Image (cartoon, rainbow, N blue to C red; front, side, top):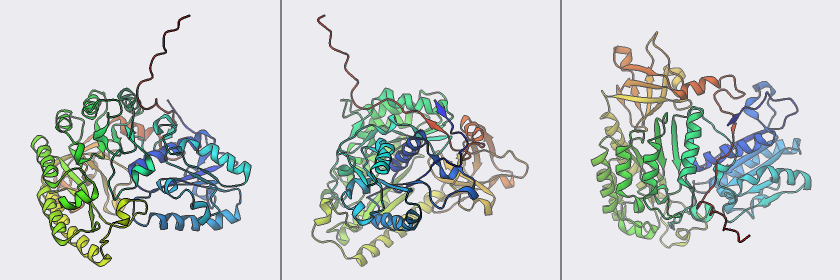
Length: 510
């Protein structure tokens, strides 16, 4: 069930949720927005531009602790809000997410104008914490060490009418030495498959045509309730949901990635031929130091088996350059695996110390200049591969889910943008007089040029392919053009919980 907020009154308190970090944070921010709207707050972006206050009555930072300089970014943003807080003492500032979980004891010390600090495990507490801080006139800090309420049980206000995130698990049981996520989000907790599918079906009924299944390690899904094949089964079950056109997932882990998942992807038409498979390093020695429980041969074997069953799959990855102790020979191994894998694209990172991780205290931390030089060499290699892989798509027709916000230059180029089935970004031309697709609709277009980071599909301008297919997603987007924030859905009720099914009550003896 979805409800839409009534037109905001001048006295209504406004909110602004600002998100940094991964898809899990984006998903959590949708829940935070839903909670605040349910508590009577109004999205500041729903007000006419001339009627918006200098800053919202409540500003929430949903933070990341993984990205480089995450702490500097947070405190810089908090500092920018301090003058507004001084001018309006009733304004409230809240900090949540991974940085709040990590720096619980220091945020209010460094930024005493912050009102609320809450962790990754208790996002549902935000409205009550705001009320307490207002009543007690002091900062409220509440950090739980284990999950209080699974995020999907909370009200949500989705960012998109036609695409949705669905969490299947939270937390992680791995112990990678560079990663702080397990200590911030806790051990893995899995939702029951029936609850996941019920949420997907509810989203489809609201017009969603694409869902992305989320977990820190999706292919260990089911370990909590004793089914190691649960993720492949879940993908196949998504294939049985009428109206669901695209299914994606992120992120798997090479150590636990099994062939049944590859086969499920290949045999389920609405599971997209795209796969994000984090490599991190091509050196077996570095992988061992990272505590990544696979080696380069196993990784390349997964890539080969995916391509054998899904030849058109676009595979992406994550790579860390300059891990402590990485030698030139280790780095060359990474370049070798990158060349053999032929990734469509790669998220590349320079290693930097994350306090609280085992790698932070390892010997042989590399000089910045060495890390930078290797990073630049990796970018050159991957750019060449990405460009060649995209050039190979030239001349083909691709089906694109039209999206908002994907093409920053669409206005000046007079193109529209969206994602192909393999998740490549496509900018396409609309011929004069042709039907114009709406966000959420599908369009089939001919690719004319493959750039390193996107495809251009202008074939329709010279008589090539151009076909629009209107979808329930486009209908949902169109129906929301009169909403307070055009195209953005109202608040939906939460879904059922997490873990093992509740046991039936024991029989009574009377």
